[in-house]
Length: 61
Image 1 (cartoon, rainbow, N blue to C red):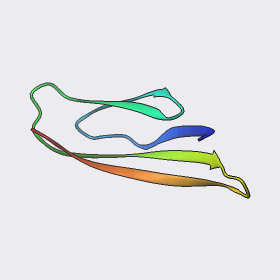
Image 2 (image 1 turned 45 degrees about the vertical axis):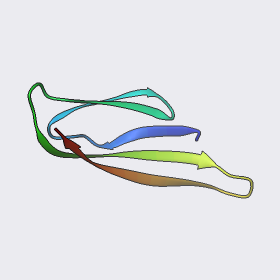
Image 3 (image 1 turned 90 degrees about the vertical axis):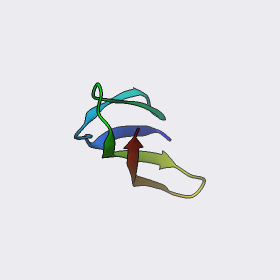
Image 4 (image 1 turned 45 degrees about the horizontal axis):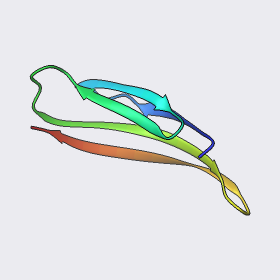
């Protein structure tokens, strides 16, 4: 992966980019339920490059 970014922020917490391949999600204090966020990842393969959007559906208990 050569680059990444937050594509959709979570509604019930914070999403922090640590480095190109690592993000840290923290739910709001005492929140329980579902949350969704998305990150955009760009990479270079042996024959081509591309970008993907990865959506995470989390359940906070």
